[in-house]
Length: 294
Ligand SMILES: C[S@@+](CC[C@H](N)C(=O)[O-])C[C@H]1O[C@@H](n2cnc3c(N)ncnc32)[C@H](O)[C@@H]1O
Image 1: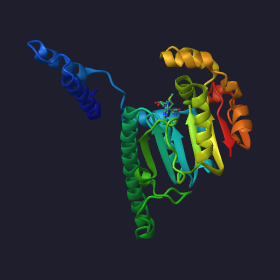
Image 2 (image 1 turned 60 degrees about the horizontal axis):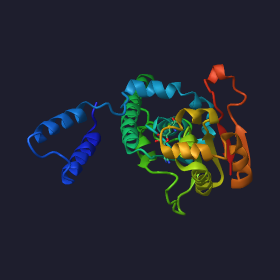
Image 3 (image 1 turned 180 degrees about the vertical axis):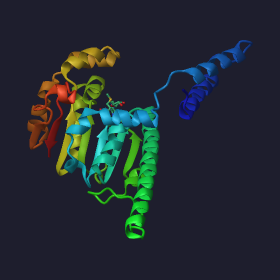
């Protein structure tokens, strides 16, 4: 599969190579160009999910089942390392947050998240339109008149269901190196399965920057939902780069110390492990999810 953004990126690489005099001249030039273009067209790229796959993936994510609607309802949220945005969009859709911003270091994933947002929002408005149609048909039959409401609303929050595009946004950003403007504030910040990558790529300094940026961005009373990968999971990935190997060998703040660091050094008031009491067979969890309150 080949997305337009990937294609243009690869053509930019092609142009850059040409600009730098790297080999597309001479008799072999045209053949090399054709091979390169074929490689671009048929390269494997990130998987863009279809609507059915999206619904299945989201439904089956056990983490959503342990989140509480009251954490998010009417709140401003940030999802660090949002990947393809499925959890981000689900929180807006199911838990009716006021706004949610997903950020990811990988531009391709951010593009993919926007695709998913468009598809899901289309699905939501199509299904709510057909349910409105059948509801109004029903009320016509029962009352002999149309119901007043024209915009589909979520029963609890009163939010229009098809306003996902207004409430959800995505941005390419490195959370460790970002400058947080003073005006930016959130009630809930999620960091699910991201800390290991930040830890391996930026070491203990990166981890402390992650935690202190989260603290700074949270409103008083706000919550930080952290799903850290355990130390044994670092062992699978520390060879991905020299930097990761170096950082891995120099880590002092092991994941088993995160709770202590967040409470005693960063300043969170309380911490709860929301998966501790749940049997793994029910939830499919093999790692803790901490909910910390500022
Ligand atoms: C294992 S995925 C987790 C995705 C999602 N949070 C979930 O739990 O399903 C880790 C994500 O973090 C992103 N990431 C890693 N380092 C990051 C950074 N410094 N800033 C923003 N995103 C980052 C990666 O690109 C990747 O999408």
